[in-house]
Amino acid sequence: MYDYDRFYAGEFLKLLTERKVNTFCAPPTIYKYLVLEDLTKYDWSNLHHAATAGEPMPTSVARSFAEATGITVRDGFGQTETALQICTPVGGNSVPGSIGKASPLYRVEIADEQGQFLPDGEEGELVIVPWGGERPIGIFCGYLGEPERYREVWRGGMYHTGDRAKRDAGGNFFFFGRNDDVIKSSGYRIGPSEVEDLLMQNPAVKLCAVTGYPSRTRGTVVKASIVLKDGYNGDQRLTTELQDYVKKNGAVYKYPRMIVYVDDLPRTSNGKINRAAIRRADEDKLRQTDNRT
Image (cartoon, rainbow, N blue to C red):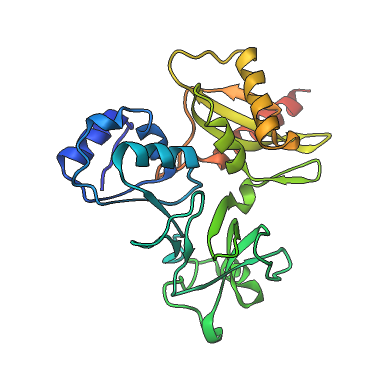
C-alpha cells in the first residue's frame, strides 16, 4: 500500500522497481501518468502481474504499458459492496478494451431499465442474479442505517450495480461507467469513456474527463476537461483539432461542444477521476449565475 499527498510518477516508478514489487494494481488514472514517463529505463524483471479496475482503461494506455514493460495489464470489476465480479484471470486471454469475464462465483447479466436481460452486444446495467434465489457470498448485507437504499439496489430480485457495460458473444464484458456518468444529449446516450479514449490519442492530452454540461436546448452537452502535457497551449486551433478528431473517429453527436483546459482534475480517495465533482462544480456556477440574473 502506498499513500501520498501528491502523486509523482517518477518517484512512484522508482519505488515499484527498487522494492521489487511482484504484483501491482492501480486505477487507470495512475497508469495514464506512468506511461508518460520513459518506462524502458526501469528494471521490470520482478514484476509478474499488473492489474487495474475502477474506471475504463484506455486501450492506448494499456498498450503503451505492455510495450514498455512486457506485462499485460489485466482489468477487472468489483465494488465496495461486492467481491470481484468480473476479471481476466491469470492465464486467460485478455481482450483489448474488455474488463474480462464473469467470476464463477456470480451470474452477471446486462439488464435494461425495466430489469429485462439484454442480448449480447447491447449496452445496459450490470446486475448480479442470485443462484437459487439466495444472496450470493461476497455481496454485502446492508447499508448502515439505510434499509430503503438497500432494498432499492435489490429491486426485482437482483443486485443492481449502477454501472453500465455490454457483453460480447464470447462472454467478455466491456465497461462504460456509472449510470450517473452517462451523458444524455439530444436523445443520444453517450458513454464518457469512449470520448475520453479518443481525446487521449492526441499527443497534447495528458489527462481528460468527459461530463455532461446542462443545456437549455439539448438537455446536456458533452464537455471535456483537459490537462495538457508541458509545451502545449490550449488555444482554439487545438480545440478544433480535438473536436474534429472525435467527429471523424467516433460520431458527430459525441464530440465535446465544450472544452476547458485545467491544471488538474478532481480525484476520489482511491485515485479515480471524480466526474461527479466536475458536474457539481458546473451546476454550482450555473446556479450562482442564475441567482445574479
